[in-house]
View (cartoon, rainbow, N blue to C red):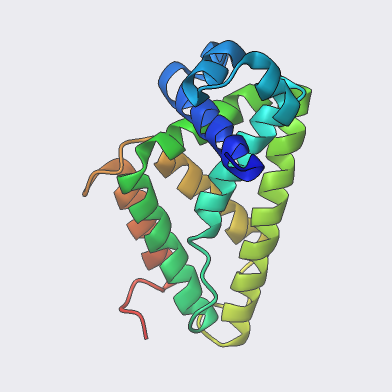
Length: 189
């Protein structure tokens, strides 16, 4: 097996462990066994538990990054992002569970907090830029605070991810309301 494949298998196994057992249930021996390797092999790829957690967080963020496609106007991109996140949370509910677990752990663990904060800073920057471009294009109110609005969007999406995303559920309703408040709930141009 190629190195990238084994590393990906370990991250996937850790992701599934966190989704099923929570952060407190994450055991490197279980991750190694689920990936079909021994603990020494796991430690070759991930010398510390924090490096494994970073891998899981990067994997989760890669899933979210797929929802930020650079097609269409900034307003279309924002609308597409919200709808793609809603779809992602519906089709991959374990992603919301893992992100929630990592957010909870970040409150008590400085190493996880650092990883978590890095992830959110990157997302915040991308959202802020998208909002500013949409305002410049006249699709959002110019006086809208892009930092505050980005934080609102991110908070809504993360909160929505922590509840079941069935149609008409709280998370689904929250994202739809956010689209209406931003004035981007129409069809995609």
